[in-house]
Structures are given as structure tokens and as C-alpha cells.
Length: 182
Image (cartoon, rainbow, N blue to C red; front, side, top):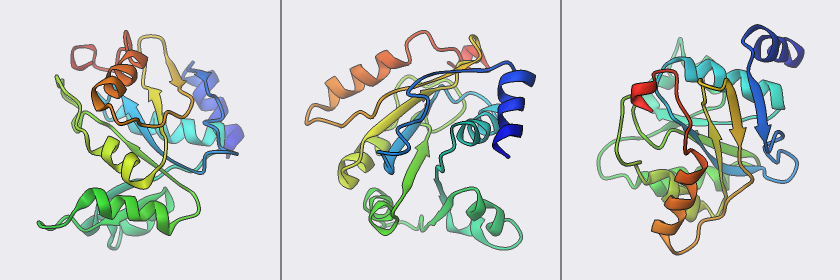
């Protein structure tokens, strides 16, 4: 399956992979992975291909109602974890607990929270990484250059503003599938 993914990713689609090309798979078993810019449904299959290409398992969370028959099996098979989203739940703590409950867990999120243009990222991913005491790994969905750039693991500090400046610098100049949403 990895050979097929590499053929599609590199040869058919013409994408490149730069940076931390193994996503530290042998040393970082737990991380919050942030993907930006998230501007199109195309990001989903690029992400699925990328994880096959580099040979890692990544995860996502979704409302628990998605994890019932007939789609529940598929979502779990591709790394999905159900989340109770009823009001009153501390979602950061609930997601951080998933890191404790799993030997290997790389949670992939889009900090924008939507495929539309946003001025500010949501901060949940940052607080999840802090609560779970795991690094953040950044990767780009750069359709202009047809490449995914992957960062080394980044550990949060006690200065959220400096941390966000650092992370946003990684994405400077990156253009998503729909440029005006980047």
C-alpha cells in the first residue's frame, strides 16, 4: 500500500516532501500535528496519502455520533476517535486523556477550524499539547509549490504569543488549494 501511495503522491500528483520527512516516527509517538492552510476538501486525501508515504499513523477526533454504523468502522480504521461533544464537557482535558490512553497517538488538527479564510487560529490544539505534555508538529498544505513541509517537534513554552509567532512563521508564504482562503 505504501508503494501505491508513493506512486500517486510523487508521480501522479507531483508532490514533494521536505523537512522532517519521517515526522520523527521512531522517537515521537505522541504529538499534536497541525495542518495549514486548510482551504479545501482536497487536503484530506493529501493528508491520507502523506501518512502512508512516510509510514506513520495519525489520528483525528470527531463527534461520537459519526462513529456508528455504517461509517464508524471506516472512521476508526483511519485513526478516528469519538469525542463526546455535549455541553459542559472539558474537551481539552477529554482529548488530552486520549494521549494517556494510547501508546501511540498523533492528533491531526486544522487550527483555522474551517476551510474559509480566518484572521486568527483557534487555540485548542495548543492547550491540548500543553495538557498532554506532547510536542506540536507543523505541516504545510502548500498547493502552490505542491509540497508538504514538516517541522521538527516543537514544545510549547509559557509564552503563548511567542509560540504562535514562531508557528505562524513556519507557514509564511504557504498557499492552499483555494489561494484566497490561505
